[in-house]
Amino acid sequence: MIERIGHLKVEIFKIKNRKGYAAVCFDHLTEGSSAHEAYKRMVKALRRSNNKDLTFNENNV
Image (tube, rainbow, N blue to C red):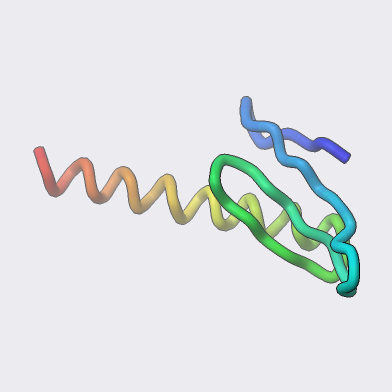
C-alpha cells in the first residue's frame, strides 16, 4: 500500500515473520502494530528529521 505525506511517497507493508506493519520513506523505517500506526510514526519521524536539518542549517550559517 502506498500513501503520501506531501510530495513524498510512503510504502506500507506487512512484515513477514513478525507482528505488525512497516513504513519506508526517504531513508526512514518505522514499525507499528497497524498500518495506520506505522504511518503516524513515519509522519513523526519525518517531522523530527526536518527540524534537525533546519536547526543544523541555522547553526552553520
